[in-house]
Length: 257
Picture 1 (cartoon, one colour):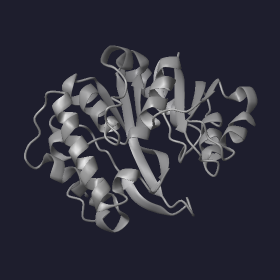
Picture 2: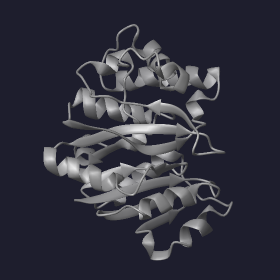
Picture 3: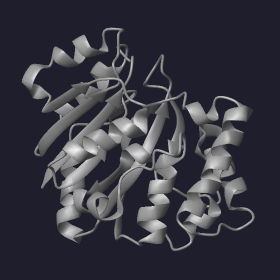
């Protein structure tokens, strides 16, 4: 199975090279690498072009945000599996994608997901949070669960059947897509209990109380778009469960054995 990896980037000269190298270093897997740039002027384009024809497809033009860019990449993809890697992130080791393919081939599932490390931007060896997804159980979304977006790999046919990112949402389009695929359409999932992605800290939705409030409003819209009704506590639990991803609080996780 061929994997189409899509990276959306805008003005990230400092870190885009790490993302690219982590993709190109993947072993024992056929990769189509698509990079969609939003018209960067800071040197990002030069970094991407320095890799020459190792990048399968490269677009650089103004767009309306990351989800527009990812949708462009999905539309261009020809692989059996879609992988989405942000320009701040990188794969934890060279066998991530081969293990993903192996899981698809063995289980015949629709999507695979794994775990993610949050690391400090200034020192990526310093782990700040551990997004340990765990095995999905029915109704987990009602208790604040979702898999980490960069560690979620779905067949291209799933996107073709159920659609790409809803660009009416600014910060919760990834959450809405997970609700649509997993809860609404009940695609078949396979969990790999390994940490496949390292993400630098600094997500926009968590930078301030106001941003978190806006994200919560969008999370509610994500349920409405799918004609789903969350419990009264669902959207309160979604940010709360993230506390247990931090190194200190992880020792007190309810599922910690």
